[in-house]
Length: 134
Image (cartoon, rainbow, N blue to C red; front, top):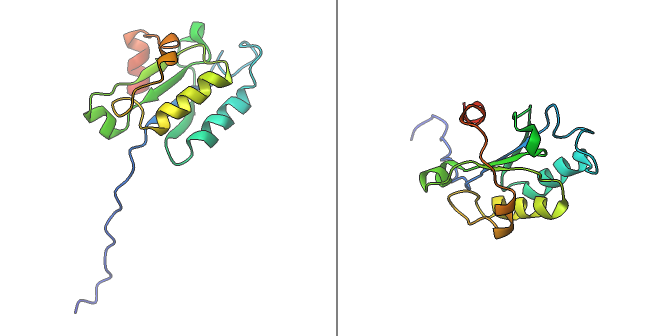
């Protein structure tokens, strides 16, 4: 019988996409009027607790699309072909709930986004995308 402590086998983790919420120079500030930015971030964190990582990030340099949210695939989602999805003008609770529903189901590569989110999708410049992925 060995006297060494037994190593626990790591549990299989649930795929967790990452939801990056821009809170830079325009997004998350009074420049985007009519939105309770703190409440928006709190709703996303609460709604995605245990299902996705939610992080507030500095300026994503897509100010004309504020408020910007990027849903990045989990490792499993990326292996399945998922890529980051940039959503702009996410300034209402209905869009937030659609993001929560999608990310909770697995996000890019693992679940189809609600069709309504197609209205929010945009492609930032390659330079801007590289800044988030880098």
